Structure formats: structure tokens, C-alpha cells
Amino acid sequence: MIPRADALAALERDSYDVVVVGGGITGAGVALDAASRGYSVALVERGDFASGTSSRSSKLVHGGLRYLQNFDLGLVREALLERSQLVKLAPHLVKPLPFLVPSFGGKRPDRLLGVGLNMYDAMSWRRGRDEDSDWSPERHHTVDGAETVRMVPSLASRRPTAAYLFYDCQTDDVRLVLTVLGEAERFGAVLANGCEVTGLVERDGRAAGVIVRERDSGSEFELTAANVVNATGVWADRIRPDELYREEEVPRIRPSRGTHVILSRESLSVGAGVIVPAGGGRTVFVLPWLGRTLVGTTDNDYDERDLDHVPASPDDVVYLLDAVNSFFGTSLDAGDLTGAYAGVRPLISTGDPKKSVDISRRAELYETSSGLVTITGGKLTTWRRMAKTTVDRLVEREGREAPCRTHEIPLGLPVDPAELPDAPGVDDASRAHLAARYGHAAREVMEMAAADPALAERLSADLPDLAAEAAFAARREQVGSLADVLLRRTRLGLLDARTLSAPGAEGAVRAARAIAGELGWSDERVQSELTAWRTVAAAEGLVPTVEVKAAA
Image (tube, rainbow, N blue to C red):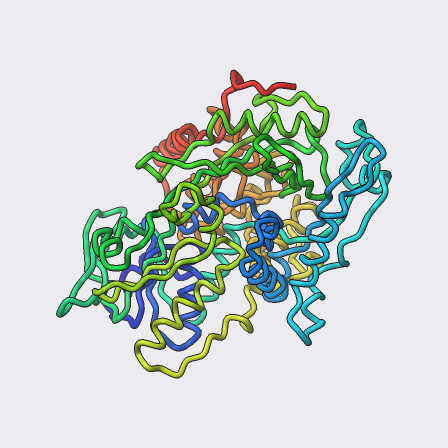
């Protein structure tokens, strides 16, 4: 990305065809789609890019088996086709992940589930397009108990009989957002975080831009644009709520909190995803992710007004650990967690208490009398479709001839780890990690590590992230705080929260100093950033208290 100061200068100086409010995956997708169709685009984000729901997902790009069980076939098929598309566009970011549904006690896998998986496979293909199946190593099938244990060692004590094996996909949600934003910028979009929209600019009763308050100075300016797109997700009704609800008869946005917990591989060893039964007839995912084991998610209404720091619920932590302990025969408690996090999904309430909130995972597009276009709902997997729908509306109302192109635009450029520059002290695990996270941009990260031995050091002893990533983020990705780096540019604030949020944590100090080298922070600023990071970690409940116990 261009330096933030340069982006701000351009936003104050120039006018645009489209301004996008919101720097999560939906806003990033709209910016890319519009810019690639020839629109001049500005995007502003109140906090950090992907700092809301888009950094707090289950990290899956998938169709959603539970929606298939609810016979929401249209949503499943749309998501499955998008899954195939994203693997092709970003093979280093969106990767197939094997999933197991084990059976025990001499029982064979459930036949009804097998029928559902047959549908899941079939729905992922476009008619006459056999190459759509190339994303997956193989179709679903049954594996025996020995193979099940090989893939999920923590199931050894339960002696599984067999399991269904199928594939979905996994990603780093924040890195996907940043990559889409980078592609949008390549097509001319101007992007800036730390820019809060406080109102609309109107000309003759029509939206003609937004009023922006800049984070550091507190100053306001008008950002003028012919079209305004509200892509703020769960915050979508904070911009002109009266207009939105009065004119469109829009069902209320009903935030739903999803909690996840993270364990070391030593505590729970899984080499594939596992679908685990949980209380209330629901299931949760147990997933390998970035060297840890990720467990989630819950789905409970969230009634708090403050959506900026949503802590992991103690009750939800117990719920997830109970599910794991019951299924794997373990006795894990909150003290075993390396981290936890929660996100709030922008579900759309139907107003009918008899209907499940699941119905509202569909995206919703609204246009009100001012011309403000609001896109909300949906899920990570279908971001490209949501963006296309939004920009199609702009194209239609302006009478343009500008077809969508995002189905053919690669997202980043993959790189072979062996092709990266050498850097003393950087091992093969870190090289592979950098290639997977950054693609071709990993070359610059390695060059920074080679130029400064301090940047070649790891931030957490058992994870491959380097201090050079903090420096790179400060130089190239509009980082404004240490928390930005630990929670989003790397994911260590989630993966290793217990260690890194402790006072005097060496990894956090190392990251802060790497940022300081790029942004010119003083020693006093470094210390204040370390304090601020610990405050954020506490506010978001990244380290559940050890008093919260789960039943064995």
C-alpha cells in the first residue's frame, strides 16, 4: 500500500466515483470490483483494516454443511462455487483442508451424512465445467480407523472405527482482506485506515460523499464521491439508521457473537479438521491453523452496544471445552488455552422469533432515497459475490457498460519458498510460512530480515513469525499500533496471547521495536504501545481466566 499520509492527502484533494466505507472483506471486495471496472475508488476504515468481523471468523472458505442440512441449497451452492473460484485466484491463501467425521464403537459412518456429502460434492461443479473440481485433492470417501488416527492423533484413545473424509478450504482471513485491498490499490483505489465516517455529504438530497474524521489529528474533511457504499457489516445501521429502516423496511441487524478458543498442538493434536458434536444439537469445528488447534464457533445473540471490543464469553469458552473434552476424552481447561477470541456477525433478523438466525447468512443490499447503497450480512466465502451485486447496482443506475472482472483477477502472486532470498538465522519453517502468507511480497520481508539480524528473530519461540513482518507491516500496510501487528498483520495476538500479553513479553517488545525502526517511535512510544497492547488484550478477553473450568 502507499503510505497512509499520501493516501490521506489524495482523499482530501481529489473527488471519486465511489467511496467505500468499511475496510473488512466486503468493503475490500467492493473496492476491487469497482476499481477493476474503471471507477475511481476511495476506501476509508474507522479502525484498522479487517479489525472487525473479518479478523474473527473460523478461517474457513466453505459451503457450510449445516446449511445443507437446513435445505438452504442456494446459499450452499453459491458458497461452494466461490470456494472453487478463490482457490484458483489465491492458491497460496485459500487451501484445501481435509475434514473428518469419525464413528466409534464398531459403527460405520452414517449413511444419511454420506448422501449429504454426495450432494456437497455435486453442487460444487458448474454444469459442463469439470475443471471446477480441480480445487480438491479428491471427492469425499470413507477412511478406516487407523487412517483416522494418523490424521487426528488425539483420537487414538477413542479408537475410531472409520470416518468420512471430505474437503473444504481454509485461509487467514485478515491476509485475504489485505491482499484484496492490495489488488484494489493496483487498479487505482486509494485506501486509508483510521478514518471514521461521521456523516454524509449531500447535494440536492443525494449522497455526494462522506465527512471523515482522521484518527491522529482529530480533524475532519469532506471526501466527495458520486456514489457512497456502506460496507460496515455489523455497524451498517450506524450510518443513517432512520433512513435505512424507515424507507426500506429493513429487518434489524442482529449481532451474533461467535467465540473461538486456541490450544497448542501438544494439548490437542489434529492434522485435519474434525466436526465435533456439541451441546444443543450443534456441532463445532476443531481445526489445525497456523501451528495451533482452533476450536469454534458459538452462535449467540450479542446485545451489547459496544462492538469495538467483543470479549470471548466465559460461558462459550466452557461450552467449547466441554465439547472437546467429551469428544476426545481429554480434560482441558481454560489454563490450557494459548488464546481465545470472539467476533460479531452481521446477521439479519427476520423479526419472526420462530425462524432461525441462520436464514440471515445471506447478503442483503439496500438503496435508500439519498442514494446510499448498503451491503451487509453474508459470509467470508461469498465476499466476491457480495461485491459484484453491489457494483452491479451502481453500474445499472448509471447506465454504464462495465462487466464484473473479479473472477479473473489473481489475488496476489504465489512464490516458491526456495526462491526467496537467504537471510541468516531464518529457517525453512519461517520461509514456508512467509511464502504462504505474503506470496511474492515475502521477498521484501526476507530482504529486511537479511539486512538486520534483529528482524530475523522469531516473535514467539514455537511459531515461525519473524520480527521483519512487523517492520514490513509498518512500511507497507498502514500499521498504526503494536496491536495492529500482533492481532492482524501476524496472528500471534490470537495464537500466543497468553505469552505475548504478559508484562515484559520479549516477543511483544521485539515487534514494537521493529515497528519503531520504520515509524520513528521513541522509547516512550514503544512503552506506551506495549501498555496499550496489554489493555486491548484484556478488553477482548484474549486470555480466558484460569478460574473458568470445563468439565472433563
